[in-house]
Image 1 (tube, rainbow, N blue to C red):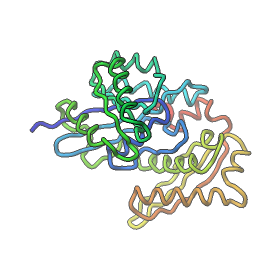
Image 2: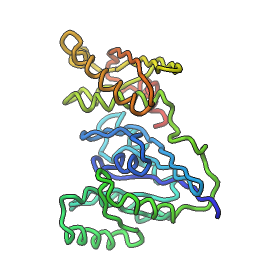
Image 3: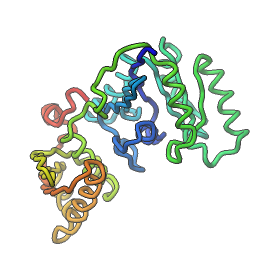
Image 4: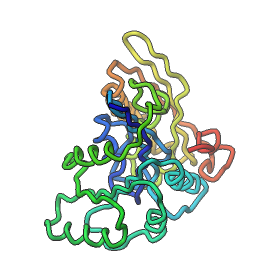
Length: 293
């Protein structure tokens, strides 16, 4: 039997469950997930390999109207999903009444197989989902449409089988043991950022950027030192909290998340620095890895 391999690019608007679905398909909590919009900032590849096939998933930022330079770079990453896909996987939330006209137009012009997942179907009746499938069939007549719940893993196997059947014949692109093209340093920084998104409100999560400055993998322990950058002294004070209580709890929850993923004991040090207006500074954005998101 010949081997199949290809790039499946996941696209959609914010909060439709793109990262949740990719993690469910991979069987790994690779992409960070929170209830807040704009959780995903970078394009992240997740790699699923068997003896018969390899799928390289690409999770991109949710599509928004950018308000500042960081968001503009995020949208470059989102739009790149149309450039190198063997299959497009469009995620839309059940109950959606108004579609993204620009995105739909790009999907209609795409010359690769298109799979549409209606996600979060849990709270909808069968006739409501059937009507949505009918509407999408009118708009995207070449697409295969699959209702699902990524969170509860309903129909995830169906989605996977559909993707495998559409893969082109090809040798694998990555070693079988790889689960992402990103470094362990990057994964660790994203896990800290995930906990910032979960634990802090208002502007703090969106003004924060995390860089891992030391990553020392020893036989029995992984030693990580990371800096959290914010834009204002007032944000630094909130992040640290009274007598350091807030950042201590952030460190505990980040360490627990990392220990589950890396499978070993973690020693984590967190520091906070102010980098004024970094989200609108081209040099800072490049230094933080947004030159090629």
